Structure formats: C-alpha cells, structure tokens
Length: 127
Image 1: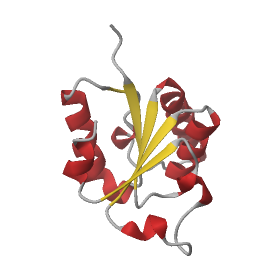
Image 2: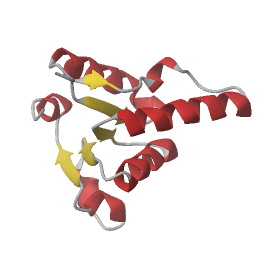
Image 3: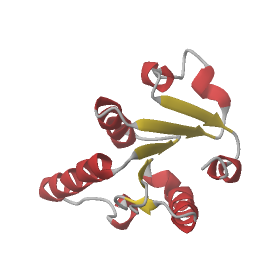
Image 4: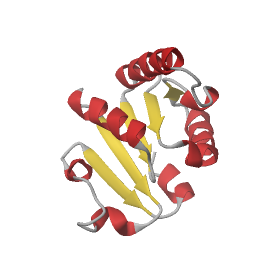
C-alpha cells in the first residue's frame, strides 16, 4: 500500500521546526514528497529555477500540504499551488494572529484549509 505523501512549506527561519515535524510524520508512516530544507539558499537565478521546479513537483506529488507559520512568500505560493490542485492544507501557527483581520490571509479561511493554533507537538499529534 502506498504511503500518504506530504509537503511542508515554511521559511528558512523555521527550518528546525520543519525538520522536526517532517521527521515525526515520517516516523508515523507518512512520506515526505520533497525536502527543500536540504537546498540552502540559492546563489543564482538558474539555481532558483531548478529549486522552484523541484518544489512545484513536491507540491504536485503530495497528498496534502502543511504550512508552518510564519512563512515567507515561497510558502504562500506553495499553498496557492496546493489549493489550486484542490489539495488539503493544514496551517499551523504558534499564535492566534491567523484569526485577526489585519494579519490573516483570505486563503487561510477557505474550505480546504484547516487551521491549528498552539504547540507544534500538539499539532503533530493530530496526524
């Protein structure tokens, strides 16, 4: 039986939490569709292009997407791709600003998005 694949979108500032989350989900039997944390920061436009193609393929290959906030522009683009592909998105935030009109996004509140606010370990237990 095929394992369920996931992709974790976030920013480089959250790389430790992303790696922790990915490892815990893999231990639970999920499969990571692409690990962008292995890339490091791109040093050229050509490198950006290659990384972008790999990340797009990772989103396409995933059964669902996780967004760990705070995220950068790339994580929000990945979330947009996942929503466009009609994939479930799990949005994690350590604080409840996702519910404040001045700091949230329209797309955090669409039907394919499930929001979790709290501690990362508690979020991981929901899978």
